[in-house]
Structure formats: structure tokens, C-alpha cells
Length: 132
Image 1 (tube, rainbow, N blue to C red):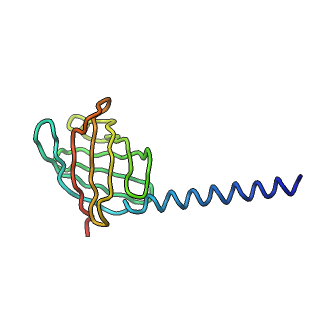
Image 2: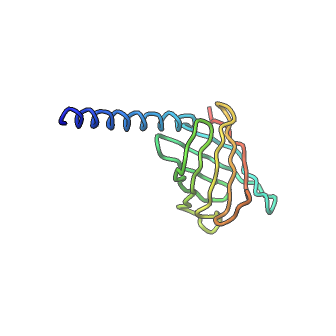
Image 3: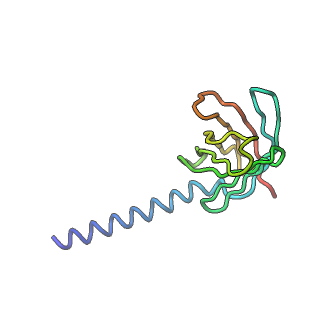
């Protein structure tokens, strides 16, 4: 019985380590600094964007709107990720608690689609380029 318990613990620890490594690999494609111009669908306006991803930290800046925040991961795959955006500065200029999807287009480009809280339709979009 003791041997079965030890084997079960080893299997569980190995599985949890493998999951963590796999999850990190799935997130790796987003690592780096990304920049581009966002487009607000409902009012035809544009604004600058700067996304910095280091490890599990996702910092978003909207320099032309004078606001910034963090993205909180909801889910990841090998070519897309879903986030909730928390604005930490400039709440009067940016929508707080929106949901967004990032899709990997290539090693150098990602697509951004944003939905306001409680809405189903995309309200903003962008193509971001990896900064060199």
C-alpha cells in the first residue's frame, strides 16, 4: 500500500510540473514588447499602444490616451490568449475591466480584439508588431 502511495505522489508531482512547463511554453509566443495603433470602432478614433510581456506580467500602455494597466490572463493556447484588462492609471480616458483576445498572426505580429464589459461585440481592434 505504501508503494502505491509513493508512486501516486510521484505521478502527481510529475504531472503538475509538466503542466506548468507546458503552460509556460504556450505563453512564450507573447513574450516581448509589442507596439501599434488601436482603432475604436464606434467613434472611428485611433490611439497608440505599447504592450510589454515579461514572464507572467502583462503591462499595457496607451500613450496617446495617457492611461495604462495590466492584463490578467484568462486562458492561453499555442496561438491565442484571453485577458481581462485592469486600468491602473487614466480611468477617465480608458475603459476598465474590458475583455480582450490576442491572436498570434506570426512571430512578429499579433491581433488585438477588445470588448467593453458586458458587451458581445468587438469595440476596438489593432495589429501589434514586435518591437526590435
